[in-house]
Image 1 (cartoon, helix red, strand yellow):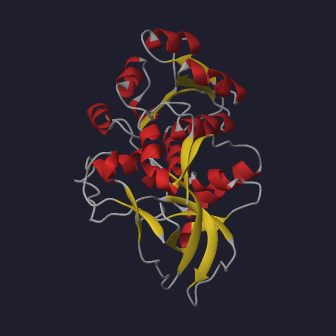
Image 2 (cartoon, rainbow, N blue to C red; image 1 turned 180 degrees about the horizontal axis):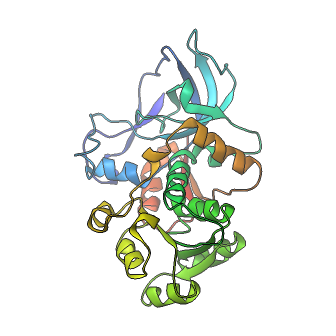
Image 3 (cartoon, one colour; image 1 turned 135 degrees about the vertical axis):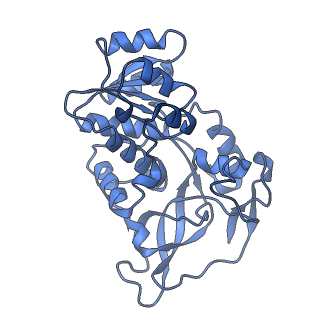
Length: 305
């Protein structure tokens, strides 16, 4: 089968699509033929070696966590799924950017027919990260929340989940995404010079909570705006989290199949949209990450084998 590999830390040029042996499922596992697999900023950071102290790579390294596909093989004794079942899931083996991937049966849920493959394959990392962030700031009905990077992969989902919790959501984003935010009940606020004053005005003077999905000083801004540290969550600026004593809950805090199942159900029922910015064939993995690293896409970028 074809799979993405890199054999050293580096820039986009280290990413290759190569022929490798197709894996075989073991006890409790499924072999899934991948229909779609999202890409994520954390994967780019791992490839560059920026996360070596926490998540070192073993070379040659595979890549990818998110996935959706069709069950191709089921190891004898594995329960819950059969050959031909359509599933949404994840792998912690950096392996989903490939034509086939082995996953634990406990790490997938059924894909409803109304959830497109590209959306299903892009859901896990961004969706569970957003879920954890919204839960971390303990929203109550009518409270005012600001979300940085509100049109990005995580931010777009977090903003919608907060609206489902009946919060008033201020979405920090560029002008090109303001119409999309408004269509989802989110009040857009342009980033850049003067943001603090614009947020104060939009919030009517004060904010109750803040979710930072972008970094670059937003935690400091939330503190200046008077948001209490326990009502601030960042998924990216860990130095600021430590400095101010704010929360840094993300994917790891909600990385379970039951949470994934909740998100899938919201999409099925039309209550949550995962915007898909672009879809690339597996062979164009370098182009996909080049697009991702611009940090200006609305929603998710997806690979299709």
